Length: 149
Image (cartoon, rainbow, N blue to C red; front, side):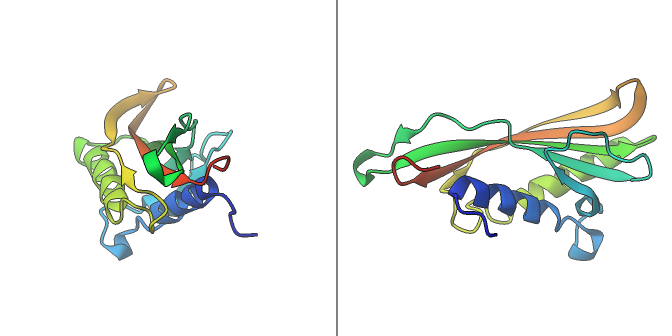
């Protein structure tokens, strides 16, 4: 069944876009091979790369002026990992690939009116093991009819 709410359509659009991050598409990594949305378990150790995408919440709506629509902010939290030793270049490539994918169309096919500039954070150790990791947080702003999401 296709997503019905704008929020769910945006979640599907983010997942689909992240899955395009492949060397065959001109990216530096193949992060798109292992994209998981809101997983509850750890990625398999056999994966060289993994990307977990979470949607931790959305803001309370603001009235969008005379348009009689409501504005929402969908929070997106993207965790990227490389299992085993990773260099600065590996982490930089992961960050660059995700930022480039987001920048392909910051209206997400016309579903949103703005994507706010993301923050990013590289990491080198997680849960006592050596990894190369990075996190990107962003907000996607979208507008709906009143009483819908």
